[in-house]
Length: 165
Image (tube, rainbow, N blue to C red; front, side, top):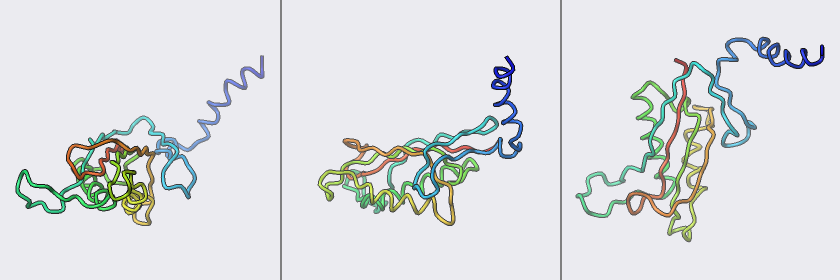
């Protein structure tokens, strides 16, 4: 009976031993050398901001409506999307360091034989996550999709960010 009671109390005692500040922090799980997290735990007391899928900005914003628009390669599109996400986050007082989850949708690049350009996306991604300026990484999924909303778009990204209330 004593073992049963002790076994039941161990998780409670272990939680009590964790400093309050550590218990209130977002826990980012994964090896430090990985480009992404294996997961993230967002404790109670955090607001979550869901940013809808963002698509790349056109390289020629002045192109007349109805004409083909150039978006660039996957790396260029990823960087443009990340800048848009950063701007959306800032409207609500968040930063890229608050992002905990990301979903990346890549179209097969005709220049890469119809396969998604994962390396190009990673070149853009690593400029915003896991860098000396912004060391936080995110939990992430990356998938190839058949198409996005406009011809020439090779990437769309959505994120969820969390910060203390």
